[in-house]
Length: 401
Image (cartoon, rainbow, N blue to C red; front, side, top):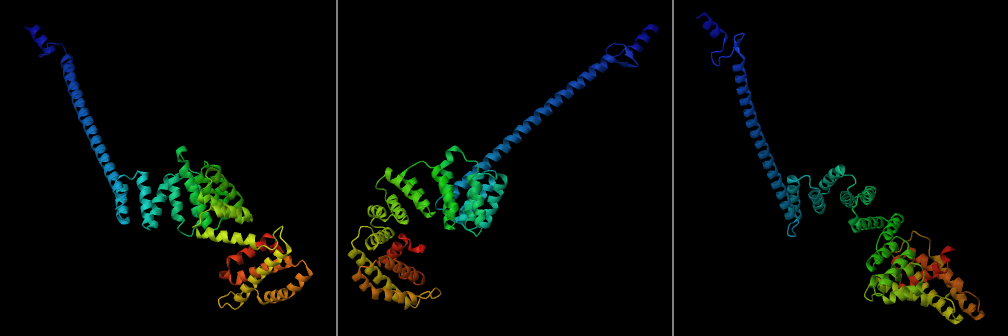
């Protein structure tokens, strides 16, 4: 009986195992195992719930983002409709940018719409923010250049154009880059910066594939930049590709005219369009230069005298009309000394003819000085013959005396 009580005292009543310090290690281990198992299961359940919630949240977020992108695209497409006026286009693009602010295309389109709607300040804010994010982006710099070109800051315009040209262009964007350079050239020409424009035209010419249209365009830019020699060369290239290209014929004629090669100019001008008033006027002046020059080579003395007489009569007629013209500019030198000199020369011209004295040079010089003086005082009174006489004097170097 005593032994039984001892066993009951030192053994677990549940499993019969020994008790240590009054506790059953086996029972404790089983309870701990059940607890750990329950906690692991609970942890796995909670992890599964968390993972499911994460994926569900991400799917919802992605769905919302996709929806915003679709809405932004829809607003962008709506802004591109030809029937949308400026204000509506700006409003649609603002919504597109709000829905998808990371889309550069939408922000550039918004800036362009703001510029078209004369909201330059807002457009500048949009573009400056884009440029701060991507300083070398060509599209942003081009838009900024075009925006600044409207204002007085020519330096900013040039800077943005140069930044655009120096930006990161893709190989397939070479034509677009050339168009940007053409924009810069036109801007410089409009500002009277011919030297800078000329350097840009040289770069453009070196990087443009030859074609009739391209050579004609480059020739026109060289001509506007004050380099008729290079202009004539490019117009000639265009004519070798298409001998009947009207723009190239007209440009070649004007280039040769500016170079003083009037016979060559007349060949081109005669072949150019007969309906262009400017070309027709240039053609008339060219013909008169060739037909009225008293110092042209291989002329008989009688023909030189006849031409000088006609030139002097025309110059004096314009001089007399200019002196009495109420609206003439009287701030320059007086025309009276020229009139006195012309009258004296006319009075001695007959005697000089009889003596066959070489007075033609002196006469052409006088005609040139009369035409130059009346051109300053009465610039609007010049006829094609007056302009031709002025060119004749210059071609023989009388403007250098």
